[in-house]
Image 1 (spheres, helix red, strand yellow):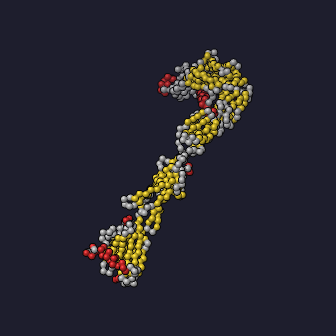
Image 2 (cartoon, one colour; image 1 turned 90 degrees about the vertical axis):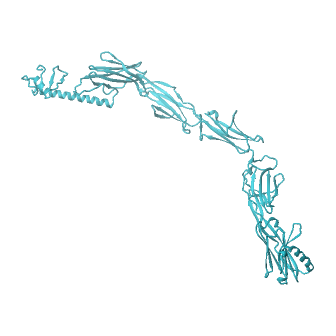
Image 3 (cartoon, rainbow, N blue to C red; image 1 turned 30 degrees about the vertical axis):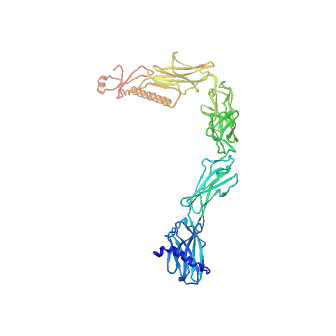
Amino acid sequence: MAVRDSGSLLIGLLLLFHTWRAWAAVEVSMEDRVEVFRGDTARITCMYKSEDDVGGITIMWLYATRSGERQNIYFQDSNMKIVSQGTPFTNRINMSSSDASREVVLTIKDVQLADELDFICFVKSLTAGEGEGRTKLKVFETPKHPTIEVVPSGVSVTEDSPSKIGVCEVKNGFPKPNITWYRDKTPLRTIPDEVTVTSSRTIESSGLFSVRSELSMKVQKSDKDALFYCEITFYIPGGMRMIETSHVNITVFYPPTAVSVWVESPKGKIKEGDSVELHCHDNGNIASELAIVHGNDDYSLENNVLVLDNVTRGASGVYQCTSLDMDTLINVSGNVTLSVNFLDPAVVTPKESMMLAQGQELKATCNALSSLQTHTAWFKDGQEILKGHTLILKDATFDTAGTYVCVVTVPEIEDMETRGSLHVNVKGPPEIMKLDNTEIEVNFEKSVELSCVAKGFPAPDITWTTSDGKPVKATSHENTEKGTRSVVSVKVTSDLTVFCNASNDYGADAMTYRIKATTQTTTQATTTTSTTISTPTGGTGVIIAVIITCVLLLAILGSVLYFLYKKGKICGRSGKKDLTKEKSKKDNTVVEMKSDNTEEAILLGVNGEKQLSSDQ
């Protein structure tokens, strides 16, 4: 340990002692530089050539300070190996050697930035003189990933001088990294009055470098789609490496150069009454004022939208949308033409109503003014009867009378239509709709309902009378498109004739109902409130057929009984019988039958025997 502590002094003495031997030389070769990352281990190799054997060789390692002085860090000869104390490398160096290859290697552990020095290998031979070599130790540190920030408020193309675009920054690298700005893969360099790149560096307390670069430039509208980024280049052992920041857009404010205005809704053709929505946009992104002008009308927009409610044909025309940049006073505009289609109310000629005589002809027209092609059709009672503008009615009858509706539509636009109507009256004497059967039979004391429908114009008055001249009050009376309808209810107490009388200024018509009162003949209890006789229907025919069948059956039954009576088969005509006793024994039911031609009454028992009324 005493020898090691006095190593520095001994090395110095040895150097002084050997200076006079400088006339001789030893060939020493070393690498120009050794590169290593901070914290790694550096290996510096020194190779020499000498005629002396290894035992006669002295090796010393030194380093040159930044001021140029030499500092010993290691000594070795055939007797000793000494590491200099009190140097930055005292505890971090080691040396190995190869006698065969005449090579010594200095190893430095945990290399730091301060170790970036020139290291000297000094070799002395006893006979061949001395020599030295030098290697520069280079230390590297990879910087942190770079960052880029652009101006969040955006940049305007209207600025007269370059505006700040953004800042790129990279920290903790060694040696100092370099920053290059790019716009769409094109490097940006300082151009007076166009582009300015300003860089600054900071040496951290660790000795590492941080670099900051700021870009300013005059932007154009095309820069809104450009990608800006920074490229960071830095050295590593054995070469150079490159890292890019993220690629970012910048917000570019520019005044408009064009304006677009269009009809957003409705799609397709527009008609009166629609709600129209106009949209207006310019191609600038500087806050500007948008307004729409139509004729002498100015419209302000809400969210670049103008709504026109319930438009009329007067809204047709050119709508001009104007954009005004208040900063630059740049004014641009765009136009759209609005066409509002219309369909006027239908005009029917002749108007409203028309009076015709029977056999007369009528020609009517229906027209509606429209901006588009129209289609016209005529309807009566909900049914289409004719296509076209002109309606011709020939040889008018009462069936011709009624309301004719013309419908005018625009095929190109759904639900665009107008209507007009014409009421036609055909004058003439009443005509009562005749029934197939006006002769009816009704049970005694029952009511029958009779109806009568009469056509004619003016609307006929309908009255009801009976054969004895008594009026009958109608229970209902109404005028319809089919004619005037009157209904009466008649209680039947005997055979009756009822007249329906229709009259107006042009004449009269009548129809007769003949009602025959019948007697209930069935033994079963039957409840009938009334019998209705009206316009012939399928149900009325069935009722009449049933009544006729019943009458025929009663007539046949009467004939059979009369025949049996004549033959003496019923209640022997020559002698009297105790009818009372027989009746009490058999408890027979008696039914009275009256013939239309005789007053003779015949009592029939259930056993079919004839009983004379005098015997009763």
